[in-house]
Image 1 (cartoon, one colour):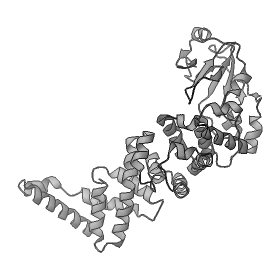
Image 2 (spheres, one colour):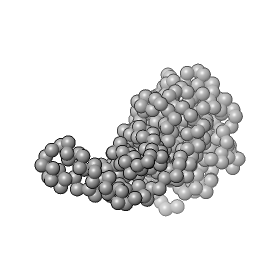
Image 3 (cartoon, rainbow, N blue to C red):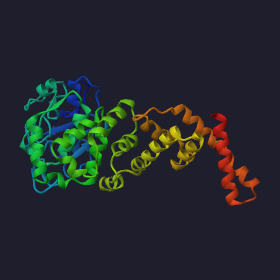
Image 4 (cartoon, rainbow, N blue to C red):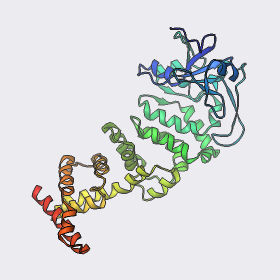
Length: 367
């Protein structure tokens, strides 16, 4: 390895996901480092930039990778914020690894490539098992969500029965009730963007967490299969979220509970209209009328790309000729409403009628 003046003389280790993914033969992502035996003053003297809040985390002066001081943590209250941290120079690497969530995430690697694996994480990587590190897992309810997210990301991994049982006990003890909306949405959105989102829902349902954090959600088995197909098609997050909510009458309440981004809420609200409009255009005697009605209801003329995204989400559930719809939207948007308004001498009712007639004419010409 090339000499690095910033870390020379420090005991530094790569930890967590980068080590796990390397063992799985996956492309390397960002490296997270843990520093053993150092103080914040030591790091500052070497030019590291402090960015940590609750505990000392630093950015490398050149690479900007994160370096955290080894720490232990102790439960001091309810929920994911109910912890106190200790980052003294006497904290060992093994103590730092023991506070982590899953054994596969509790492996360290030296800069030279050697593994430090006191908890059997490498064996669990090889066996494709997600297993909690220890009883301290139950002190942080976010770990239930992370477990689900990892199950969604790594489709060939199983969840250790004792880990699922521990999650059940956590839910029964009320720990899941302490989860805040931002953390639930952060983990859920990442799980939805994984390869098999239904596995996250399955883990949460199996331990009882789903009913606590998303009580409005309905039709989980059916929509789970939908979002898996959406993942296979590479849909965007708003499209996947819309499919997740499609059987939920109280989707607005769910969006408020999770503080879902506006775009995701809009897709969830519009997808049922798009599905109904597609059905109407198939069975309506005047398909062109139904097609225009759908485009107007979904605001396709002002926001065509969102409409095409919604059609892609709809295509998970039924055949959709997306190329034909692109031509229809282009035809309707090609109507010069300004010229019609000028010709109608500012009569609002007549303008509206003539614009609609012109759009229908364009659609019929292309039918």
